[in-house]
Length: 359
Image (tube, rainbow, N blue to C red):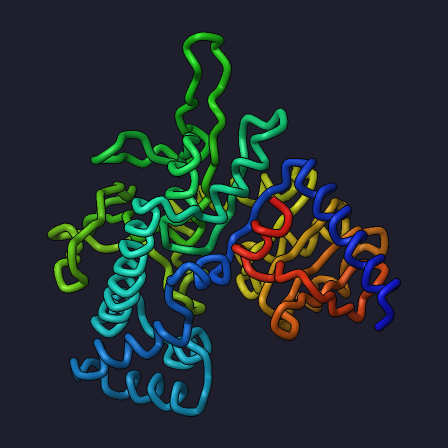
């Protein structure tokens, strides 16, 4: 590839990123946004489930289906779908507990990095977006971790996720979330609205209760991490059963608000999101097709679902996709260079790399 083409694509990418960021995009964070900061991959979660749950001897037939699928190289979600677990079964409960503990501990480790003043890319992103006139940023995420919350705190910004309170938080829903006003000028404080459509590791519910509560989660060691007595984590594990669970609160309100936000967005920035979650990608793909707005995707690689979304998008959609290339390079796809061009000297396909390059 000639230097002239590389330079043109590099300039086009920067222009499109700047255009997107200037429009106060809806930010969509997938698991890839957290993996680079030490949170577990799907493969690591599967390994943890095998270690924790395999020795319990629960529902050996279903467990055999799960284990055989993993041994055959299938991913966590595909294996769970094959087993068709009932969400009231002891095996399902044990899997949720295993996932919760693994994610919660790595979240605690990430928090310790934040306390040591390690700058999060979330903070850089929020700081950049709030550098203009924006008073609110909306983040839609399928992640359970609290990295976005830590990023907002690190930057001195307010954040809300549908709860009120600090230590014993009660669910109000995203529509009725409190507003934070500056008393001197009665102006809304810069606030990050978090739509955690698959739940959060610090949300819990007592059996029979309709609404969740938010409670602190922290411990000095992984073995010390405990769920509140008599409560269950409010998280949706990666399996087709998640679609049934999301008919109930808090997921129903969060998904409805996410749909509304996507329909009204002026731009989109997706980070580590592979378009594999129908809760989010269906309306996002529709928006790319019917209301083309500036669109930037930061991801390790293009999944089949992501490629399909780009193929179905409006021909007038201006987009920039940043994916992993050879060491020290980024492969850039734009609406003018749909086959991708490998650009030397930039490493912008990860959240950290994107933040260092453009924020």
